[in-house]
Image 1 (cartoon, rainbow, N blue to C red):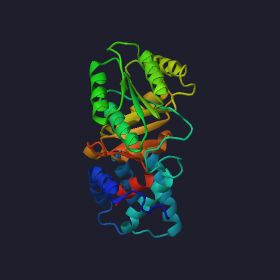
Image 2 (spheres, helix red, strand yellow):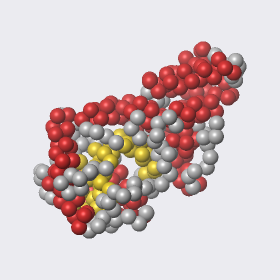
Image 3 (spheres, rainbow, N blue to C red):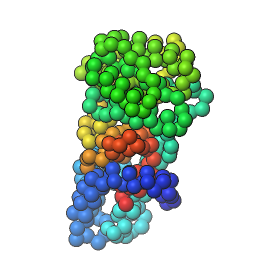
Amino acid sequence: MSFFKKIFSSEKKETLDKGLEKSKSSFFGKLSKAVAGKSKVDDEVLDNLEEVLVTSDVGVNTTLKVIERIEERVAKDKYLGTDELNQILREEIAGLLSETNSGEDTEFTIPEGKKPYVMMVVGVNGVGKTTTIGKLASQFKKQGLNVVLGAADTFRAAAIDQLQVWADRVDVPIVKQSMGSDPASVAFDTLKSAVASDADVVIIDTAGRLHNKVNLMNELTKVKRVMQKVVDDAPHDVLLVLDGSTGQNAFEQAKQFTAATEVTSLAVTKLDGTAKGGVVIGISDQFQIPVKYIGVGEGIDDLQVFNKYEFVDSFFK
């Protein structure tokens, strides 16, 4: 399969390799135990492999799909050596992910003909939501785009302050009100300001409360409705930020948020500090919502566009 051709620059690829180092070494440690003493892929190896994938946070449903694909290859090829398993895994997981129409991008881009392009960012507190917004603003600005931030997480004073720090750092304008203000009012003001200043991209931060889904749903629906008074098809993207280091909990959050609001894309953060990078494979496959961005380090440039081929290549290298 010709999935793997060089797409990223060597510097970007190096950052990705380094960011997935813990996940990779944990996975291969488990994999080598799974095939120890075996020369060919048999039922026992497949059972062990299933366990390796599940405990690497790939998720049960995605794991079963991968195992099924490998079983088909074993049946077809009659003999598969365990030394080939790594390459087969790499190919089958890339093949599986290629069936979703996400993870094809290599650069931070926005669609043509949407100006301003409005992103609404959702996610529970602590997942790296505000940091992701700051890093996105930096990347879009590097592309020569004018960015405006909206501090509509008025539930926490710290969220407004944190977004202000990022706005100052990246040198982009921010629209904010005091803590406890109506989030929809902040979103409305942000879009008004963006239209008046001919901005290209608007990124709206929202509150991360999930303990009451009905309130969250009502609030996000109201924010959307009010934004549409200024830009009739806003938001163009509802980006859910998930903390990759929480593994299966990230799946749960994705489930909860997709039930509360229409999520159109995902960002998975904090992959560099964890051995749970397999969660990206599972989430990408299970939710059929594109994983657009991944966080593979703390630096301002360590938020990357998710490219499934580069990701799988780094993971199984």
